[in-house]
Image 1 (cartoon, rainbow, N blue to C red):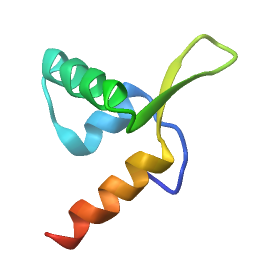
Image 2: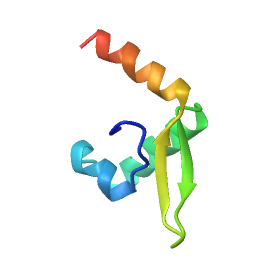
Image 3: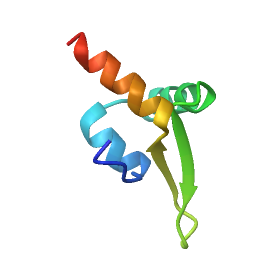
Length: 65
């Protein structure tokens, strides 16, 4: 996820190409598992960022690709 930066749903979906409902389900699952956290901007826009656990998980998964 772009060097620890937070991204909007739209920015995330540029690479994922998921339908809106599927993206919501995926993000909800990652949040529930503690792999993502939500941040809010001054203009109440929801943004997502990997947690330390999420970064570790992503690095682990990258080893198998």
